[in-house]
Amino acid sequence: MRTRYGLIILMMLLTTCVDAVVIDVGPGQGFTSIQPALNTAMDGDTVLIHDGTYSGTDNKNLDYLGKAITVMSVNGPAATVIDCENGGRGFNFHTDETVTSILDGVSIVNGNTGYSDGGGIICSQASPRIINCVIQDCYALFGGGISCSSASPEIFNCVFRSNTADINQPELGAEGGGLDCYGNSDPLVVNCLFIDNWAKSFGGGINCETSSPTIINCTFTGNVCDIGSGISSRSYNPPVSPTVTNCILWNYTVDPEQIFIVSDTPEVRFCNIQDASGHSYPDCISVDPLYATGPGGSYYLAHVAAGQPDNSPCIDAGNGPAAAICFYGSSGLVCLDTLSTQTDEVSDSDIVDMGFHYPAFSVPTPTPTQGDSTATPLPTEPPIPTYTPVPTNTPRPTSTPYPTAQPSTTPPPVNTPPLTVELWMPDHYFQPGDPCALNVGIRNEDEPVESAQLVVMLILLDGVWFWPAWQPTLDAMEMSVDTGQKTIVVLPEFTWPDAGSYPSVLFLAVMTDPEFTELISNIDLWNWSFGP
Image (cartoon, rainbow, N blue to C red; front, top):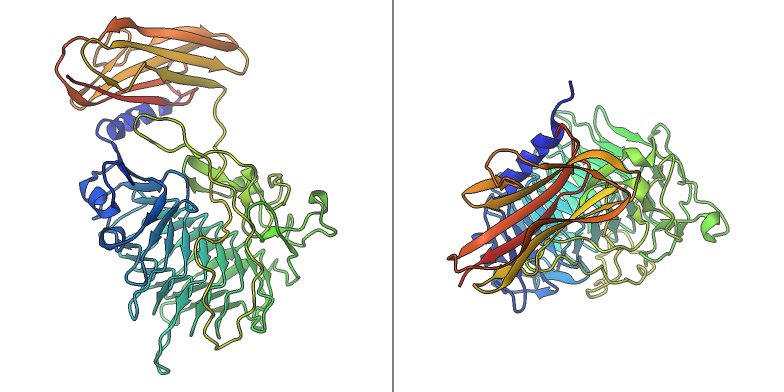
């Protein structure tokens, strides 16, 4: 007997859809500053930040207040900048946030917490999910970009650029130019770029003390520190188990030592390391990675097939297939076989390449909006400028003012099933006398489906009703679906009556197999309301 996974997923979706709303932030929106929107948001809500540069008291030191909410931009980090103006940090996660607290697609610049931790973001006893973000030109004593204290955040597809961990007192140390983790923090860091970060004492890119980070398919270049320009991880009691896999750590500077680990059980494998301080790590190499500049930045890998004269030694040199290395993006799970290390943007296939992967092609990122289901694609960005070496023990120069070139952090969409459903109503708000109707469009790009269930739900704050009987228990319409397109009329056109008002109504449509055991289409939502 098959487990009824599809129906379980459907019911779980209902529990999040009934109360979830989108809260828009930006010029001309419901909120013009971010923190008031966070104060208003409830678990499951999305705070959607429109294009612009956000500064001032209500746009820094931002606090989720322990809520399971998503804060995301409309058009990505190149268009959405949180400028801390060298006084404070971007976000403060400190109230037991988990991976259900998501930060997606913003740039945090000019953070400065002085002798405190986390110039861009601090995670203290909190483990959020941070994806598609740029942390740049931020300064702190520990963790110029991000600091983690007893915290294990997920950090996916982010760029750490020109951040600093420093202090003007010779007897004190400063650690983790890009990312610092201590106190049993076990962050998961996948497909990130660490560029031109600087630390006084340990870990120009990443420093972890008494912590066990997992670092997969990241590229470290231009980072500077006396001990561990790329990564420093150390602990004497208790021992720690850092894991570094499929990474490139290469500087082209006078300070080549890239990785420094003091641990009983380190696992560093399938990496390209410029200098491992005399350590011998299995399946690792130490060869010029042959970076190439492409549409998204300067850290693609040279491929003869893409027009470069030689192949990078990092091609097909990672551990396992690219399809097996995945992380969460804006639209769901993203695997490296949908991304690229080639300047011609051909996706990685077969054995995974080492290092950071760029988008394989340019696509818009779906983002939830009120009254508009169309998202604007990220703007094309110029390549990252060539790195200028920074001498050891010399403060790094002032970096290029934002905005600077960053790789596009928009992941390609997860593959959709062959059946697609799309809800349609003439508007998202209805007053007495307005024409109203509800149709479901079905598109089948594959072989005909002999039997499927079309489920349409009306979701109100106080209940759920299933079409066609409009009853509170599961109901659906069984049908065959030929190849091509068809339209199902759910509500024939009528005139909206004088029926009071209701602030938030959802229609949901999805197709399942005949036994309701699995979903065989996307899930589509239509948010609407009515009133006088």
